Image 1 (cartoon, helix red, strand yellow):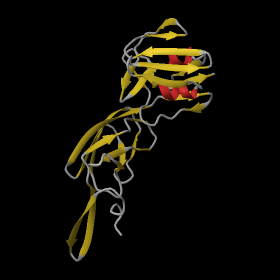
Image 2 (tube, rainbow, N blue to C red):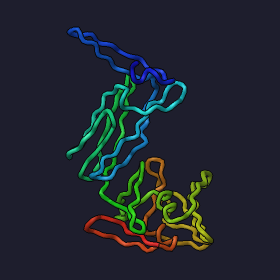
Image 3 (spheres, rainbow, N blue to C red):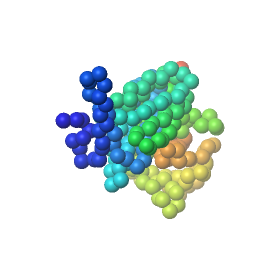
Length: 229
């Protein structure tokens, strides 16, 4: 049997006979490519989540056993395994990744961050959008992952482009693009705006943490946000 041809997803095998030896490539039949991993932690090997979308709108993970042409561009040392899609860079910055599978070509960026977020002594791992420092020199984090780590429930009001965060008797309403929030009916301002980046709502970590009653510290030496509650 040939790996990749035993699944229910459509794929073709391309055989090559040379010098009495037979080799093959398995190419999935896809219409487009999407990348769900948009950020990684510097110095940590991360398997990128990159998928091919079939004509039936099914999502299949790329990498082995499928054949693809991968190119990673970064002005600093970087490691990448096209079979496992393991990506590792030591220095922070933005890398460009290009992949071609069959006739489908897609490019996307990977943000490498050296910022860590630790809550009650345990580091929080962000699967697809990492923390970053914005133009206002504020550390931005995905609101859902941090809020849920602090025991809160997060929902999204699409009509008003608003994040709603609830814990105990606390209700926080935060609109995208604004530098203020409604906290139990009281307007609280902060010095940078909530934004959407790579389909994730990013908020200043100090505001959201302190609004939920946590204490926030910053370790410049290790570039770590330390949250306790």
